[in-house]
Amino acid sequence: MQSPIHTDTPAWAPHSKVPAFRLIGDQLSRVRDLIIEQLTVPDKTGDINGLLKHISSRSGKMIRPGLVLLAGCCYGKITDEHIRVAAIIEIIHNATLLHDDVIDEGKQRRGLPTINSLWGNESAVLLGDFLLSRVFKMCAELESHAANVIAAAAVRLCEGELRQVAQKHNWLLNEAEYIDVITEKSAVLFSSSCCLGGLLAGASEAQAQSLGDFGLNAGIAFQITDDLLDIVGDESKTGKTLGSDVDKHKLTLAVIHLLKAVDEKEKDTIITSFLDRKDAQYDKNALVEMLGRYESLEYARSRAREFVSAAKRALAGLKQSDAKDALIETAEFMAGRVI
Image (cartoon, rainbow, N blue to C red; front, top):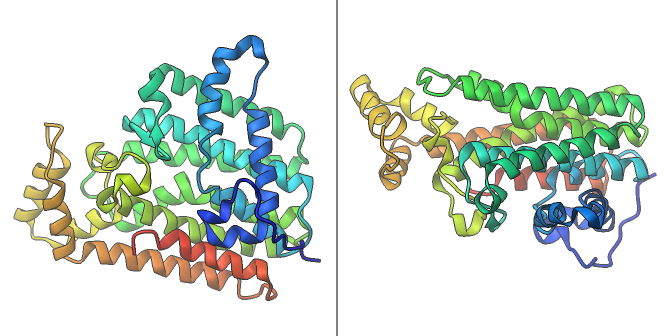
């Protein structure tokens, strides 16, 4: 039986960021409330509360917990376990963002200064660790299978991040290798969100796998799009520091396509001028112009759309419902942010 649709608009309206989440507004607000509860410590440690409030006061799109809930709606009612799992997954995501901002020297996240820019790298790293410690405690209260899925996803996320670091300055990185990296460092959390949402609502292993396949493909599309935003996005709209991939010598799909499209002489020039430069500045407009001229930006956009199509195909056997439509709408939103 599908979870009922709530039409009342909560004080915090998630569908203002992700329209498809209008179906789960009340439940997603419960997830947010639980996250805030977990990011609160006794008054005697009030100095820590200041850091935690900075995190809890700036909710992002909450796509991953939204997928947990929508996947659950496809097969049954939303339970307290769904709310807890959704909160855990979002807290894991927030912890990775804290660490990413340190690695990438990010100054802005979700339209506000980053923790590392306000209180330093030490506070940001330790706060990320604190969030993960909360996750450990919350997972101890879960059914073992759900906890195992979350733990496996966390391991793969870290492996993906390590693989990306190992591939810095590798100008021979190809598309298949890039897809493998973003699958591990990003898409697995989307996949686990969808899989767990289904399992907790009574879906069979095969049905949960289909949801997981949906999440994996949608997650790959999301990361391809996110990498595009890092090149062509507007910081005033994205709310975060951009250009970190080029600054940190990381190849993304559009640049991989460009390096393959040009001749060897121009490839060397691109590497020297943009990718492997010694100074901190580069001509972003010149890089964007070149990516446009060789249709590298459009290639990356088209690949994102192809992964969205694969995500939709994964749901082919799923009974028609408002929740299924919302999943598809969410996948299209994830890949449509720069198109």
